[in-house]
Image 1 (cartoon, helix red, strand yellow):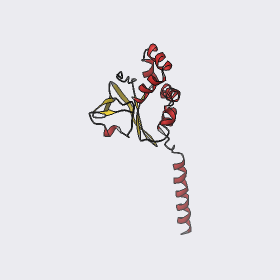
Image 2: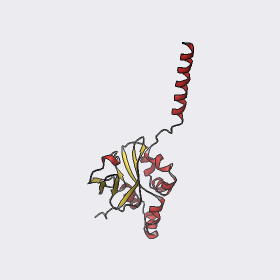
Image 3: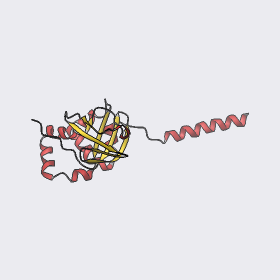
Image 4: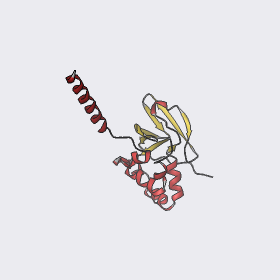
Length: 160
């Protein structure tokens, strides 16, 4: 009996120790900041003031362009965004939906972004796209939503 109890206590202790090594989920903003391939996006979120907005509230779905995706944007466009914070916010909020949308729940449809404009979502099997961007890594979980890593930067339609 004593041996069985000792083994039970040891098993529970090992199980709890194993749980401690599992990283706790963090906010959408912090999830983006922790991923080295999203450092450009993370910096732009901070620069625009949206980084702190994505740390609380939600749920959010963020279509997060990689550093490589930002390299494909013409330098002139990036310079213009750096000079005009409102344009930068428009571009960044065009990547965010005010809902938690997993890859499994994507339907061929249009969804409104925080920018106010809609993006076209499409799914074929496990293949998901948003506008012309392909989701490279889906369903990166955060405490207040989900991040989908995409291969290009989404440019919103011009506001009239």
